[in-house]
Amino acid sequence: MTPPDAPIPHAALPELVDSHCHLDFPDFEGELPRIIASAHTAGVRRMVTICTRLRNEPAVRAIAEAHEGVFFAAGTHPMSAAEEPLATVDQLIALSRHPKFVGIGESGLDYHYTADSAEVQKTSLRIHIQAAQETGLPLIIHARAADDDMARILTEGYRARPYSCVMHCFSSTAELARAALDLGFYLSMSGIATFPKSQELRDIFAAAPLDRILLETDSPYLAPVPYRGKRNEPAYTAFTARTGAAIFGLDVADFAAATTANFDRLFTKARIKAEVI
Image (cartoon, rainbow, N blue to C red; front, side, top):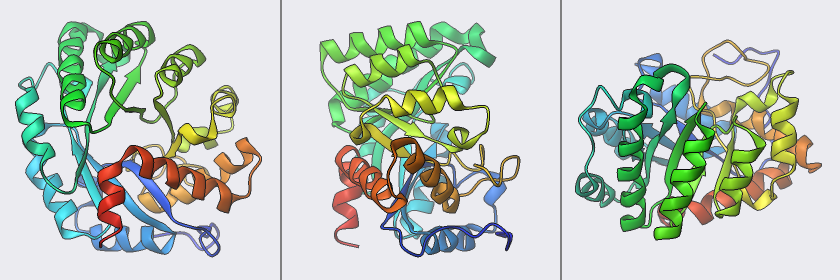
């Protein structure tokens, strides 16, 4: 429950969007109606719940089907790439036909914990890139301690055939940020940006165009201040929006409106669906 000493700022906000969360994780078991209602109260009208192992896709899809304003994406997380069967392009294309399926991934590279599976991660990433190219849906990228390979593979794929992409929970280097932005990609701001020692990351966001910034929680992980160290949830997008507004020197309402417009431009299926629900 939300502590009374840290109210979620929502009274005057336009719509916020949590572009990346994991509502199927055990942390939320039995609480989803409350979690989603709390998000709506905080102004978070839409959220994208991410499937990280394709065998869990039916459960993730069911959550999106059961809740207004909840959309989903699916792929193989790089840390699971060596443990799961490789996805196929055809498999991802088939999933993309669902009206609430709005993105490909998350995929990417993670050499911090799973460097030993780097080659299979690269293969998996290229499959997800091709699926994004074929479907026209945005690629959702997880990147950790693999900046050179990440920039190279994303750029090679884009030069072969353009696609759209968001660097989810961006916390990498300024060099990778520039490489992604040069390709027209988006950077997603998570609760990490609110941490006191994240000034270097805040500087990277400040140097980016406002029209390439999204908000996310990555919940149940990475809760923003004042909930750092506790379970995160989509409602807390509002706290990261406060920090984002300060980074860009904007009112919170203006920053919220800008990031929601960015989400609509990237995740077009979620925008179209939102207009009719």
